[in-house]
Amino acid sequence: GDVPSTIKVDDDYLYVLSSGKQAWTGDETQGSIHKIDLSDYQNHVTINLETTEHQSYLPVDDTDLYYVLNNNIYKISK
Image 1 (tube, rainbow, N blue to C red):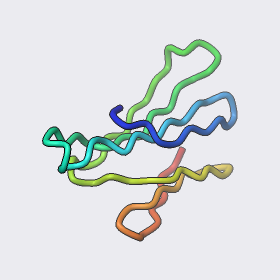
Image 2 (image 1 turned 120 degrees about the horizontal axis):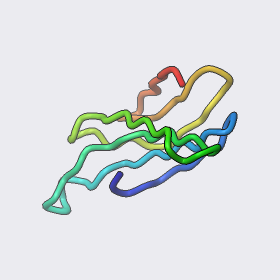
Image 3 (image 1 turned 90 degrees about the vertical axis):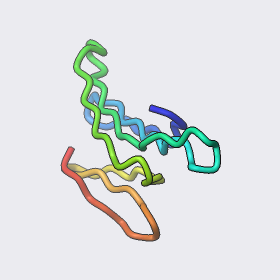
Image 4 (image 1 turned 180 degrees about the horizontal axis):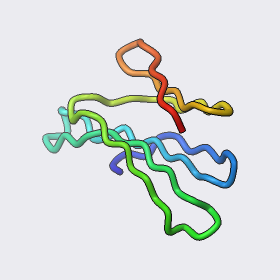
């Protein structure tokens, strides 16, 4: 994803938060969260967010991922 901003390793997975390019760049792109299996690097899941959403931070707990968007905290299952 464009503009990777946070990486976390948890339970043999690498999570990468990409914020996407902002509108002021003239080439705005959507943010995304990537889940990569570190045992073989083949199993890769991408969660795409809206083009106009540029999230930040990526705390991880036992069951969920969290990210911040527009001063709100969102939770999604791992």
